[in-house]
Each structure stands twice: as structure tokens, then as C-alpha cells.
Amino acid sequence: MAIRAVYRDDEGGRSGAAEICLKCGVCCNVAHSCHVMNDHRFNPRYTFVYDCLASDKGASNPNIWLCVSCHKCEETCPYEVSPVHFIESLKRDAFDAGWVHQTIRTEVNQIVTTGFAFPLTGATERQRQTLNLRSLPPPPLADLTKIADKTHIAEKLREAKQ
Ligand code: SF4
Ligand code: SF4
Image (tube, rainbow, N blue to C red; front, side, top):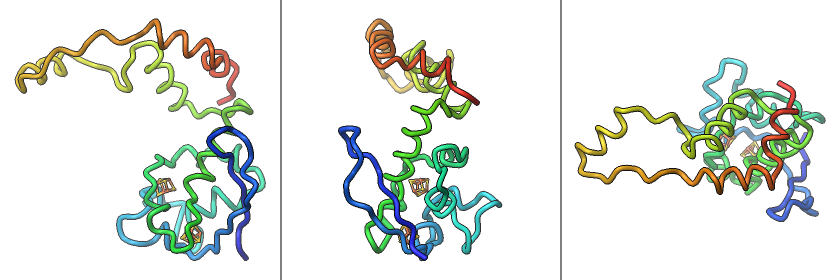
């Protein structure tokens, strides 16, 4: 049986068109496709994409956060279903509902408070010097704080469930 689902468009509204996944498994099973398929819970008969798209309560499925939005499934799907768009939409729904995986909370907090997606160490600066690269400029923390305030991201993260 095919899976029908809808996703939000870029403006945040619901896409009117339902798209259909035929559960052929190509996006998860061709060589160098979805990396999540390395997880032992998924297999050629029950793929990561089915796990995310076939549930009525996809937004509360913690596995949606395993998707790294690499878009390989979009490239490999022969039917142009683009499961990554559905999964990203589920993540947005999950965020709005307060279901935010701990790694995302940590990552967002790291970006808002330091301006970098990963912690910088002295080794970073030494490597840049070795490569004759300029020192990194100070991060725009005031702007990041404004964005976090305007989008209520800090508030949402505080209220988020694990
Ligand atoms: S975008 Fe997500 S679902 Fe698609 S291949 Fe990458 S990790 Fe897998
Ligand atoms: S998203 Fe495309 S490739 Fe993946 S199972 Fe559905 S129809 Fe097949």
C-alpha cells in the first residue's frame, strides 16, 4: 500500500498536493543512499523512510531526528517523492509541539550562545595559522540573540519535552 502524506511549503502553509510514496525502498537501499539505514532497526523490508512516513504520529517519532537532511533520498527516488521534505515537515511539527530531541536542543543552544555550530578549541586557531588563514571574526552574538528572541526559540527550547 502506498503512503500518502503532505508537507508544509516554505511559507509555512500546508502544501495542497498530497504526494505518494510507493514503498519501493529504493531511496534507502541503493548503494550510498540513506545513511540511517545502517541502524540495525531498519532493513530492506522496513526502511527508515517507512518508519517516518507511515506513522499517523510521525512528529512524535524520535527517529525523525536521525535524518540529516542530506537529500540523497530525493536524488534516488524514481518517483520524485522527496521524503526529506516530509521528514523536515515532521521535524517542524515536532518542534511546534514541543518534541525536540536533546541533540537539537544542544546544537541550537551552542549556535545561539557561541555563534558556531561546534565548540572551537585552541587547536582550531593553531590550524588556521598553519594554513595562513585569518583568525575567525567575533561571532554576531547580539544578532543571534535578537533572532532567538524574535523567533521565541529559547522559550520553545525551555518548554520542550525530551
Ligand atoms: S535526507 Fe534523511 S531520509 Fe533522506 S537520505 Fe538523507 S538522512 Fe536519509
Ligand atoms: S520515497 Fe520514493 S524511493 Fe523511497 S520508498 Fe517512497 S517511492 Fe520508493
